[in-house]
Length: 287
Ligand code: R2B
Ligand code: URA
View 1: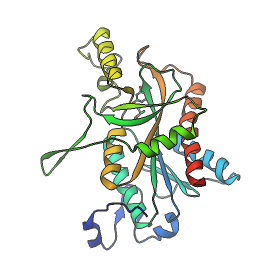
View 2 (view 1 turned 90 degrees about the vertical axis):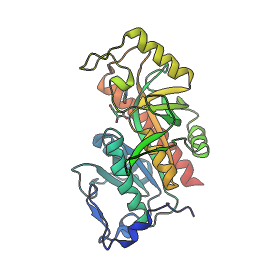
View 3 (view 1 turned 90 degrees about the horizontal axis):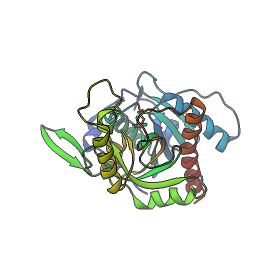
View 4 (view 1 turned 135 degrees about the vertical axis):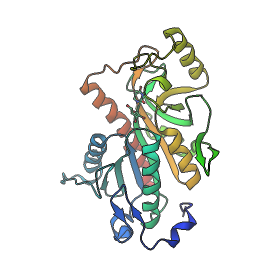
């Protein structure tokens, strides 16, 4: 049984308030969450709900009235059988708070070998929109392979290379979907750090500069841009948690910056990433 590498200071807390989730250790977290084996997360509350609805169909066969657990002021969390479906908001600071509190929740609930999946959207490089990318390694927007935090005023760097075993299982479970693996750039901005030319500010670079950078990233093995995989991967590595990032591409950045797909197409794309996760979960549960 794999255990979360948890902070030893936590044992001094009488009650631990998972403030942003609206849960605390005065509640019977083991009863509420003890059977959780997968935590699936993405940026948006609408997608967390849609995924929970899909899980109900896939695993339960009944249409229940899904209600979020805890508070929804910052994040949204549903539970369907052994799967949590949650929304972590946009960007690494938002995800970081969620990762700390959900990991403590898994620890207090004594969950056995939980797997964390980020199921998200991204901008692809040289890929047809709707392609699903499984992240091998996350890079920052300087194309460097570490997540950086200042702790006690000092710069700390953490690698965000993903577990080859779980990625191979995801690929194997999805042979019939359009799924590729590659590096992912986790940017701190949707616009300039992703080399867009359509932000509010004059970026100080040209279309040619942009294409040179995209080509450099592509040659390094980068296949998509999003905004969280670096923090997610570094956190999973530090906590000893199995984790993977499965993102669908909404746009091919070699062809443009704006997301112009119709709402119907965008929802179909999102469903592809969710389906890839469900196919993996199904094979894991069958093992
Ligand atoms: C992908 O999409 C969001 C920005 O639109 C962000 O959360 C991400 O990583
Ligand atoms: N999310 C991103 O961060 N970038 C994109 O281009 C699309 C979705």
